Image (cartoon, rainbow, N blue to C red; front, top):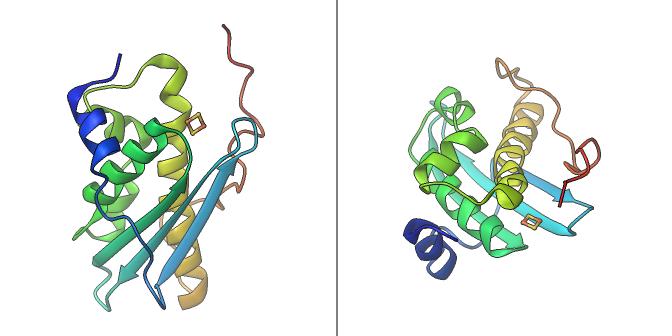
Length: 145
Ligand code: FES
């Protein structure tokens, strides 16, 4: 059901933890499944993401996608981090089962929320970044089983 990469990132998640005085912090949840993800970004003066950590209170797929998402944005510019969509995360994990696709959206939204927080703190605008939703389940369609 799960790829080896998903199992690896679930069992040995990378970048777990918190960053004190982070440049940006983003928290998003999905009220439907009750899962919550928080991402911390440390961004330097040149706009490079020097460090990133996450805490996820959620399912295994949410843990694996947050782990992979943090690996994909580490050392990147803000604009490069904007390209880390849930599809990119899923591809890097060699796919997720269809019922678990929504979990990868948490990772994308949490990164966007942390970037939004960073932009607000610094009075800047990040091209293509929209105000993140704190509950990504709000407008989600009912899953079919
Ligand atoms: Fe909710 Fe995976 S079941 S994030």
